[in-house]
Length: 555
Ligand code: NAD
Image (cartoon, rainbow, N blue to C red; front, side, top):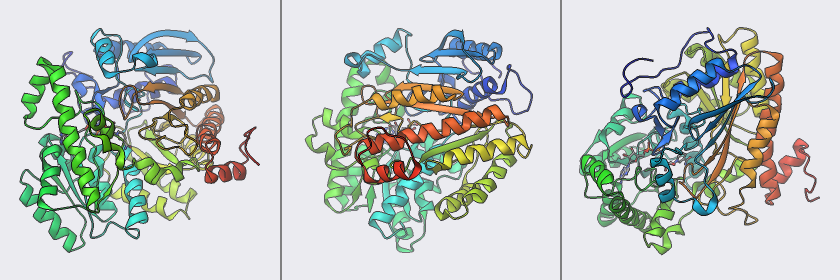
C-alpha cells in the first residue's frame, strides 16, 4: 500500500507469509484489499468496488482500522463490521466466523434511498452492494459465468441452443455489465453494448471482454449486421446513452433478437446518467441538485424501458437483468414496465431448485498456477458435466485475472462440498502454494429475498418473505464460515432486497475440512429447502434425493 490518503493504491499481499495471526484473518485482510485493487475495483480511490456505489469500507479511516483489527485478531475472536466500520471484537471460539458483517440495513419503514443518502451523508452507513462490502468480489469474471449461464439458458429456450447468427442489445459496461459482451460471444452471438462512459468500454477492450469500440451508431450497426450475416461472434461497445440509442433503434426498425440492460439503474443518483448530459455535466448536476438529477434520470429510464417494451412488441426476447430498471420506470409513471420478465424466473430458477449457484475461489498465493491446478481438479472431479468442463476450458483461455487469481463456476447441492474438500486436499498436499478462499455471490438459491429479481414470481407468492437470507446467515455462522455478511439493497437498491454472503477458507487442515463440509452443505441446502418449501417440484425431488431433512416436506 502506498501514496497519500486520496491517491493511495491498495493491493493484497501475494506471498505465503502471514501478516495476521492465522490464515482465516489473513484471508479476510487479503480479500478486503483485493476488492480495492485498482485492477478489481471500479473507483478504488472512493473505495467503490462495483455496482453503482458498492463499497468495501466506509472510508479510508475505517479501512485502516479494519486492517489493524484483522492484524491483531486472535484465532478465537470475532470482529464485527457495521456498514464498513469495525465496531467491536469479542472472544468467541476457533470455529466461529472471524468476521461478521452487516451492511446498509435500515428498519423497513425507513428503507428508502432518500433516507439512506441522508444517513450516509451523516457518516452512519455505507452501501455494500453484494460482494463489495462482503469482500468477495473478484472482478468482472465473477459475473461472467452467471451471465454466460443466463444467455446459454436463453439460447437453449429460444434459439435452439446457440446465439449464432443472433444479436443482443444491452446497456452498461461497468463492473458487472462488462461481462455481457464476452458472455454473448462465448455463446456464439453478436453483442451491441451501449455505454455512456468510454473509459468503461476501453477497460473491457484491454481485458479482452469486448472486441471493438465506436461512438458512431451507423458504424456499430454495420459491424453488427455483417457479423450476424456471417454468423460470426462479435462484441461492439457503442459510446452513447441507452435512453437515446434504444429508442433510435426502434425508430429505425432495427430490432435485436434479445434486449436487456445492465446500467446501474437501481441507483438513479449515482448509477444512471440521464440523457442530454455529458459525463462532467452529469457529475456537476449530481453535486449541485441531486433531486433534479434523480428526476431527470427517472425520466430517461422511462424512455429507455419504453424502448425495451417496443422491441419486445416487435419480437425481441426481452428480460430484466437484475438492475431494477423496471421499478424505476414504474416510479416515473410507466405502468407497463413489468410487462417483461426478470432473468431469474425466465432462466435461472430451475438451477436454484437444485441448489445450483455461484461458487468461486481465490488463490491467496497470488499465483495463477494455483488456479490452473484447481481448474484441472474441477474437470477431474466432474468429468461428465460437459457444460461445466466447457466453461472451465473457455475461462482458462479467455479470462484475464484481475487482482488475486480467481475462478468461478456454478455447482449444485453436494457438488459444492465435494469441490471444497478437493481444494482443501490440494492445499494440504502443497499442490497449491497457499490457502484458498471459497465464497459466493449473494445472488444464490437460499441467500436472498429480492422480489424484483431473485425471488420474483415465486410459486407460493413468497417473493417478499425475507426470513430466508437471515436464516442463511445464521446457519452459515453456526456452521463455521470464516466470514458471514447480511446486506440490504444489493443489486436492486435500497428497500428492494435483503441478502447474505459467506466465505470459508481452505487452509489444508482437518479443521478446515470439517468447516468446509458443513458450510458448503448447509448453504446450498437452504437454497433447496427454500424452493421446496415454495412448492417447486424440482426442489422437492432434490431434497428427497439428497436426504435433506425438512420436517414438513409434503409427502
Ligand atoms: P456499474 O455502476 O459498475 O456500471 C454501470 C454502467 O452503466 C456504468 O459504466 C455507467 O457509465 C453506465 N451507464 C449509466 N447510465 C447509462 C446510460 N444512460 N446509458 C448507457 N450507460 C449508462 O454497475 P455494474 O456492476 O455493471 O452493475 C450494473 C447493474 O446490474 C446494477 O444495477 C447491478 O445492481 C446489477 N447487477 C446485476 C446482477 C445480475 O446478476 N444480473 C449482478 C450484480 C449486479
